[in-house]
Image (cartoon, rainbow, N blue to C red; front, top):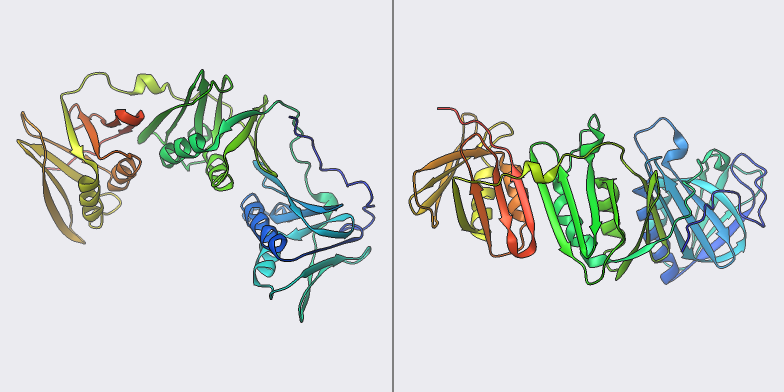
Length: 389
């Protein structure tokens, strides 16, 4: 299946004005709810932090029996189709957030949307409600990425689970673009994803029923997180990769994102092979203890884990807030070991494990710790924080 660029003005409409030509359509019942759902998804692909006004807009293109919504922030692009009663074909560019909010608050019943050639606004009517929303210049809307590539079908559940498990370790620091992405690999029947912000690293391997496409790409974490929303109830996702972009298809929705150029850290070299201690821990109990202690661990205050014979003590202390201490029985033997971690990072790792137990592998107080869930092939490496005293 190919993905065609549909940015040009659609046949049957003439873009003669600064805000588009004629357009008229209506939605009611399920179609109206579908319109709101599609607008909500498209809004997440717009940019609200730019001086380029059109990037905060959503383009509406009407064609027989359906409207297409399109949005982009130049990194992420989304196109989706909604069934509608189209009376006049054409296209306009609406302010994304305002239009979505208006549609969300419309009174029950059919909603009609009309734009006349030469006017600078879109008329909205539902029941006794009527409004006009000023439009942006549709001809200034950027061309969406033109991609003509084969799509491979991938189980949506496998993608969702793998993305959810690793994405929280991706960096939000735009000064290091590679680390804001997730390394995605398909090798035979294995799907693997890895993410790191240089303070922690997540790696998840998922076995597929059938061999997937052979590919490797660094994909923005934001795009993959959006994919999990779009594919929340889907059975499969279409996936295609070109030199510059990655394309996902979920039903009538197409999500396109740029590939991140650069070299991702060598994950296997970052995972330690030898350890001083390995202890199996009850995941739920440890997670609750970390959450409680984390309430008193300020941003720069480490969470202390002290492993001693038969027990683990979780503690935190802050001069401004107070202190906390909790002891759990664990199967630990040998010399005591105390190590500090960022409370939020440790909590993220434990939340990403699905089993009842988790293995914690430790080397020494100033070397990384490794959470391992071998039953579902998940690894979470976390850097320590130097403890005072």
